[in-house]
Image 1 (cartoon, rainbow, N blue to C red):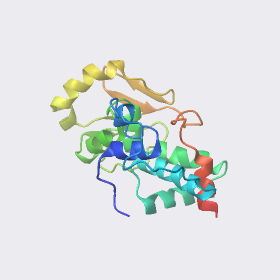
Image 2: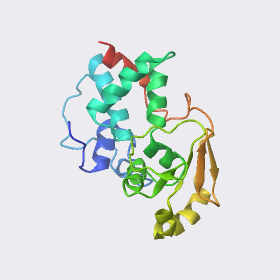
Image 3: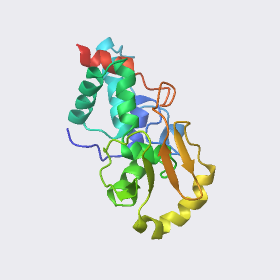
Image 4: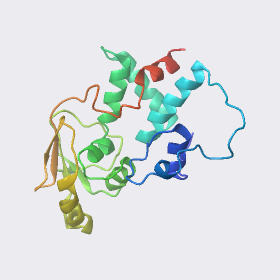
Length: 202
């Protein structure tokens, strides 16, 4: 399945939660699902609920179906709780850490920063959004990124952005470091990783 390139907030309205990361998500103004309203309420099966939960996580992190399934298989082969392992793998993606560190206002913007070669890991440019960032590695702007107009904007805006506890941030130097492994409570509460595991376990 190809990556979804349509209106981001349409998916947010479809699933009833803000997944795009935008402060002015359309779901705030239009909480109803897109399309004509159904005259009768349709009951969603257990399998349908699991599919919805899987699609919510997959869309929020911008992962395609085949890649997401490989993440699940990797999580299932790790010791521990599979749902927690899956969310940790997603949280440790480079584009997500750029977003969590406050370098981007959404995962989509963070992915764009990585693709454009503005992000470095341990001082070396890395332009692969899905790259796995290890514990202790440092995220910063490349030399090209530091010279960009965006760096000036970011230096002002990052002061007011919240950063999770598992990431250490140096706002003055525009650097971040993965200080711990993300755990339950470090990702959005509307995600249900157990339902995702049940979907793939059938």
